Image (cartoon, rainbow, N blue to C red; front, side, top):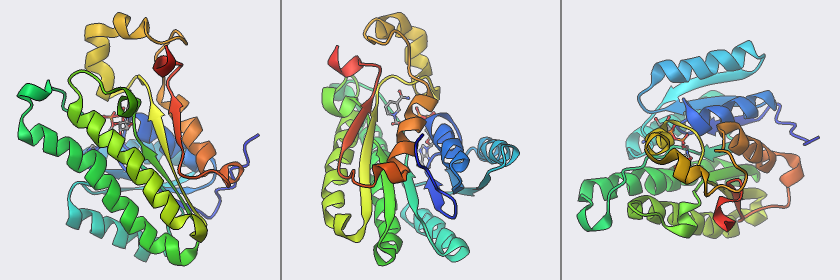
Amino acid sequence: MIRTHLEDQVALVTGGARGIGAAIASRLAAGGAHVIVNYRGSEDDANAVVTAIHAAGGSAEALQADVADAQATETLFRGVFSEHGRLDILVNNAGVAKDALLATMRDRDWQKVIDVNLGGLQRCTRLALQRMMPARSGCIVNLSSIQALRGGRGQANYAAAKAGVLGLTRAAALEVADRGIRINAVLPGFIETDMTAMIQRRAGDEVLARIPAGRFGTPEDVAGLVLFLCSEDAAYITGQAFTVDGGMSIA
Ligand code: NAD
């Protein structure tokens, strides 16, 4: 059994209203943490995640902020710190994809993907560290992607952002390891969520044929790994990148 012991801990999951983020929020809450479900626009979805956590006996609240907006993100963290006085776990999950071939990619689609997936993640990490460093403890998990390693046709912006997440994870982990703070990255393969729904409809069989495990991943497959990384059993693990892809990246 994984020693979770997240009781009395406060966790923030960005983009936690659906998909992988919602599954992570539920698992952290089941582990005993009070979970802040951040959302950008989908208040109803975020409230539904919170209601489900409460129904299962957990503790959670929903807080709005666009992580690509510096001021809104600072307000989010200020609110968390003033309400709870601590932040033990940050899961940088919020992400977007705007696929296009690089030769014809619009500047705004490049910028948007960098701003959310990398810019928002570095801002949230920085703000969290301001509280975790004096506390001399904390755990941050960053959602990267196997596209950080493989590229991906039509995904130059996304692959660049997710590769940037790996660099940031390692550099930041080095800076704060001696303060008892761990920072790791998770690289999902093809997980069934809204983000991948269109690809699944258009080319699902083709993608499935490239997954040795013979099935698409589920948000719960990723959430289990994130929960482990936030647990006491992962106390000596930092600056690492973990793939959860049913073997896709080695096929
Ligand atoms: P999703 O689109 O279902 O969910 C992403 C969530 O992030 C949504 O709730 C969305 O509203 C939120 N979000 C987007 N921009 C935001 C912003 N600016 N501020 C706050 N929230 C914002 O996608 P998902 O599949 O659940 O992906 C979750 C994470 O996992 C992302 O970082 C994604 O890049 C990564 N990932 C997903 C897959 C996959 O196959 N689904 C694979 C690799 C990596």
